[in-house]
Amino acid sequence: MAEVAYALQDLNDAIGRGTAESRAKALWHATDVLVEGEFGEEQIRIFGEVIARLADEIEETARAELSRRLAHSSNAPVKVVQMLAFDDSIDVAGPVLQFSPRLDAKALIANIRCKGQPHLLAISRRPSVPVEVTDELVTRGNQEVVQSVAANAGACFSDFAFRQMIKRSETDAVLAERVGMRKEIPPQMFRVLIAKASGEVRRKLERERPDLTKVIQASVGQAAGKLYSKFGPGQESYLALKQSVVEAHKAGRLTEKSIANYAIAHKFEEAVIALSLLSSLPVDVVEQMLLVNNRDLILVLSKALEFSWETAMGLLFLGAENHRMASRELDDLRCEFKRADIRMSRGILEVYQSHWRAGQGDVRDEGRSDGKSEAKSEAKSDTKSDGKTEALH
Image (cartoon, rainbow, N blue to C red; front, side):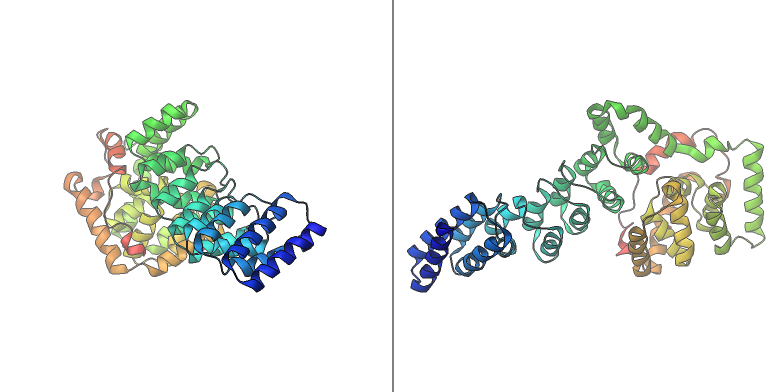
C-alpha cells in the first residue's frame, strides 16, 4: 500500500506543480502501478479520481497513450475509461472502445448515439458485443460498421438486428454474404435473405457452407411458387377458391375488412388473391411479398390501399414465421407505417403495376398459368423499385 500512497501523492504533487514533464512522469508511473497491481474497486476509484484530473489537462497524444495502456486492463478506473471513450479523437477513444472490459452496454449505447462512425466502427470490433449494442450498431452504423459487426464472431444479434441487416443487404452483397455465414441466423430469416440475395451471393454461400446447399436451393424454389405448387391453377380446389374471391370482388364485397379477416384466420391463399385483385398486381408478386415477408412492400401496399395499421399488422403477422413477431419489431414497423406518405406509396404501387402489367396482361387472368410463371418468379424477386423504401422514411 506504500507504493499506492506514493503514486497518488506523486500525482497530486504533479498536478500542483503543473509542469508537463512532472505530470507525464507521475501519470505513467501511477498507470503502471494500477495496471500491474491487485486492487479493490474503492482503491481503483481513488486512482481514477486523480488520473482523471490529470488526463483532462494533458495533450491528445498523451491521452491516446493512456487509452492504449488502460484498454485491456480490468483495473482501469471506469470514470477514466468513459472519459477516454467519449473523446472526440478516435485515436484517444478507439483503444478503450474496442477492448476495454470496463465499458458496459449502457455506456456503449450512449457512445453510439452521440459519436461518429469511427467510434461505432471501434465498438463493432469488440471481442464481444451484446444484443442491445448490436441493435444500435445496425440501426445507426454506416455500411462499414454494419459489415464489421456482421463479421464479428463475438457479436450477438436479435431478430430485429437480423431483419435490419437483411434489409440493408439488398444493396450490399458483402453484407448479405456475412449475414448468411452466421450460423445462428434463424431459419426463416435465412430463407428471406436467400430469396432477396443475388445469384452470386447464393453461390458463394453454397461454396462456404456446403451444409446449407439444400436449404438454399429449397428456399429459392419455395419462393418461386409456393401458392402454385399447393394449388395448381388447373386444380379444382384452386379454381373454386379463386372463383369465390373474384365473385366477392365483383359484387363489391371484397374490402379491407375481407383482407383483415383472411389475415387473422391465416388464410394465406385467399389473402394473396384478394390483395392481387385490390392492388392490380399479379398473384405471384403478392405471393412473393408475403412468402419472404417483405415488410417494406407490405407497408407500402397497405398505405397505398389506405388500410388501417391493424390490417397492415395482420398481413405482417401472416407473412411472419409461425405468425409471430417481437413487440419491439412491431413498434418499429408501426412507426414506419405512421410516417409513410399515402401519395408516395401510391406512386410506388403504380411503378410496380406498370412494370408487371407490361408483360403480364390483366391481373385478373393471373390465375391461369402456362408453366412459365414459376420460371420467371426468381427473376422477378430480384427486381426492385428504386424508390421502394422512400415512402417509409
